[in-house]
Image 1 (cartoon, rainbow, N blue to C red):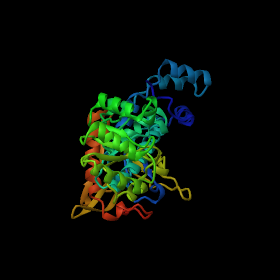
Image 2 (image 1 turned 30 degrees about the vertical axis):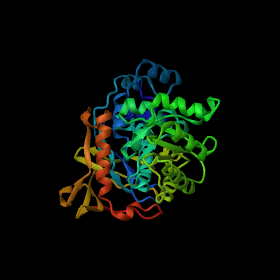
Image 3 (image 1 turned 45 degrees about the vertical axis):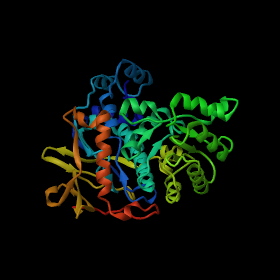
Image 4 (image 1 turned 135 degrees about the vertical axis):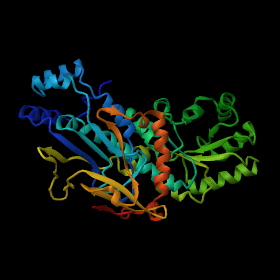
Length: 428
């Protein structure tokens, strides 16, 4: 399915004017970066690269797209002819998915003709702004959970395609599973889920409902115990399943108090191995308040898929260099509060004893002058996509890289209170 019209009209009108003026084929360097982190957060997690590669591959103007543009008179006929043959033939470098980033980090760079590069602006920002916002929020929740498993279950709180993207980004950031089946099929994210309150209410009694679920799923299932009375439901659950009951789920109530009561009751019934999972409008702050409670796992929905208050990462896409007869010429905005740093950039994570100290961004200079880890990798070279970043394998690699990159951060990076970025960004 074509992604060509998942863009803003002005991308095509700029192309149209550039083709007519003869500037469309000028070689350009576009850069994606964020001027700041969302809501005073101390680091961000870059995500969406693998999804973006699929979207760029599908960025094709077929007969239906071209006919609609013709009817709407968006561009001239000679531009429609150019669009009919559009295939991205440039190169893209970016931070690896799962990499941490900071204000000013050059997370993605497109080198192409102006015509080819400008068309991708909205698509790139649409994918990266959402996926990165979700991964950044998810990473904070993973830190707050302190090793306890988390599951993403927010599909019903966001658009159907965004739900898949959110599940993918959350898994990269350290969540262990999702309720979304398409995320499982498309991206290899482990799926989970048992029953909702409607299943209990379907039956004439809670006993019938629990018996039906146990018959279908076995004693290792998770029973939802807060449809009516929690204490009675737990007694019933252990009576029917025995001490081998896998877990109980709590979706309401004063969780810090209730979880302790449920744990004591389960233990008194001999179900010492039965886990407790909670799923009641959680965010990183609620998860943190449960740190001392005997919770075994969490399910997070609305807050996760909306970026926990920051549904977009605030990334922008700017032209930072173009060629003339003598080579590359750095260019940049000078607008108050929106200035951009001109020129091609190479980024290095400076480390000391395995801990990140600074983000060193070399502007038109040699990155070898810094001691540390080079952050950018090629995703596309002369129109050819590097397949290692795509599909379920790419997601798994991103998840592993995120764990490594986050482990390099200083301890202050994981505070939930607002504060400065965990490390400075230094231009050289």
